[in-house]
Length: 158
Image (cartoon, rainbow, N blue to C red; front, side, top):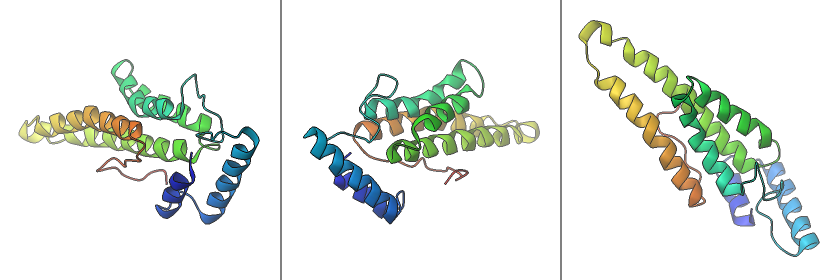
């Protein structure tokens, strides 16, 4: 992680001033010790993936619900909780993914209610379409080194 990313996280409210100074100090210590910048303070490997690859996996892990219901909520929580303490970018992406997973589950449950009264499948189709589209957009944004908050997300975890 470079100083510009840290500053962006501080300005967007993800990092407090104290966390920013701590991460900046670690960044400079790491650069002095290795004479090569590291992308995070946990090293470059997370489950055998680099930082971007891990964050892409975090976004796409929501599709685990296609195999077993609610696994798309459990797997992101496990991935996020593994590195959230050591890497503020993983923490931010994890919160976004988990908040969207829970929000979309709630929206899906709510969208079934009118089905009993008016018989419309449109709201279910919209929620399912967004469930498939948003993680892909999130993964693309991560690959471009951007933080993207899912629209329509209820902030359960801040």
